[in-house]
Each structure stands twice: as structure tokens, then as C-alpha cells.
Length: 354
Image 1 (spheres, rainbow, N blue to C red):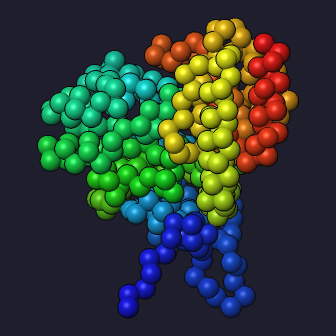
Image 2: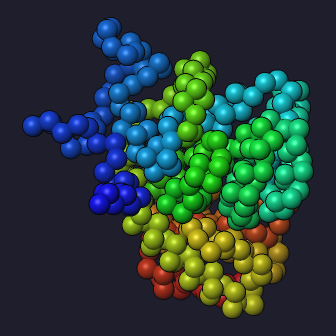
């Protein structure tokens, strides 16, 4: 009888550990060195570092490919875009994270790509627009509107056309979605978020099943200098060890809060995709009330990031770069692992004060 496949939860705990040696460390140690002794695979950290290998092994195992770590999620995003020839057509979600949209728009403005933004929940529209494209960039769920694309259907159709697919999997994580298994060519993560999970790391990653593409990404990382730090890789790998526990709890909280929010008259258009730890909703009284709401909480932290153990929220249009498609009164809430009744008490107190 064949051995039972290892579950993602166990991979999160076990993958990326050093080869066991009597007296050796259980966890990969932090190596604080930039200059390395000649004779190995690298002599300088920008060209590679042994401290990254455990993290890359773990993320690769979880996503089912070869992972390349970067200094941030945007560094990972740029590395994928750098693989495109000049003038290539890119089809991307109109609801992408605004940092991604800003970079795509900047490249289009300078003639580096031809950009076409579409509603990626409309599978037929994506496929039609991709017929002469080089890359389809999906974010599923999108940030902050939490729209979900049919990654399998899109990937199957556009791959047959010779078009590559990249999926930002930051919000779903490989525990809820493995885009490479669904036909995508690249998976991108802001590992600063759920993977590391403690709001203390800036780090990104790209995963691919194409070894030539992986080597090309490493070359871009080396030349552009978007290399991860030793402490950041250590903390992210440590965070991954508890990803399944954190995500299960946060997801349960998020589903409960979304359901309760739908019963409040002060709230409209509650968005929850049915999985994950993100909830978005609009305040019926408008942008000023939404802003006041986020600034009046006692437990929920008014902050811009997401994916940590603490619950955070903010009105997204307070950022100048947020696209006009995001409603002015929309609040994005990243749900953490606190007691759900404490969170609800905080939310209802804020709503009552409106």
C-alpha cells in the first residue's frame, strides 16, 4: 500500500528543517553574514544564502513548486513582470492590490507593457482579452473587494493559447488554494501577511513549477537586489509553522463576524468569499462615518496591514493610490485569532457610537 500523502498542515510544520545531525539545531539558524568563504555555491549574500533555503523549501512544498524568496511582496511581483518582453500585453484584475496596479500602470505608461484591466470574476471576458496576451495576472481573492476568480477555468483556457498565468495567493494561502495545481505558472506571495503572521516581517516569494523560470527569477533577484534578510526568512519560516492553526481560527472568526455584520442596519455590502480571514463592508452613513468607526475601536487595531494574529481594519480610500472602484465608505478588516465575542463587542460598540 502506498504511503499516505503528507497533509499541508504537516508540511507547514515539517518542511524546510535542516538535515538531522546529532547535536545539530532543529530549526535553521540565523546566519548574520553577507560575505561568505569562497569555494561554495556563493561568495556574497546577494547571490544566495543558505539561510533562505529552509523557507524556500517550505513555501515550495506548500505550493507544489520551486520557491524563490524576495525582500517584499512587491519585489516578488516586479521580478515576475521583469520576465516579460518589452511591449508584452498583460491582462490583470481591475481589483488588484493598489501597489500591483500602480506598478502595472507605471510600466504601461513607459511602454514596457500594454495593460488591459478586466473584471476577473468574468471568466469569459478574461479569456477573450487574453488571446494576444503574454501574461494574465490574477489576484484571488482580490484586495480589498474580495472578488474570486475561477483560476482553473482561466488557466486552462489561456494556457492553451500560450499565455502564462500568475496568481497572487496572499489572501488565500496554499492551505486554501494551490494555483499551480489549478494550471497557473506563477504564484506570488506577500509573505509579510498570513505566511509570517505576526506583523513583524517584510518579505515576498514567487513559486513556479518551471525550473528555467525559477533560475530566471533568481537572476532577477540577484541583479535587482531584492534579496531577503536572514532575520526575515527565519521569522517567516517560524510563522509558517503555525499557519494552519492561525488560519483556522481567524477564518472561523471572519465567517462569524461577516454573518453578524449582515444583521446590522449601519452596514451594507458585506463581502466575505467563504474562506480566509478577510472581511470587507461598507458603512451606510458614508466615508466620514466609516473613518470615525475605524478610529474608535478598543481591541481592533486601526492599521493598514493584514494577516497578523491581531484584528486590524481601515477605510481603504483614505489612501490616495486606492482605485476609484473601491467605495469611499468601504472598510477592510483583517480578522485575527482573538475571542470572537470580544471582537463583536468592539464592533458593536463602535457602530452604536455612530
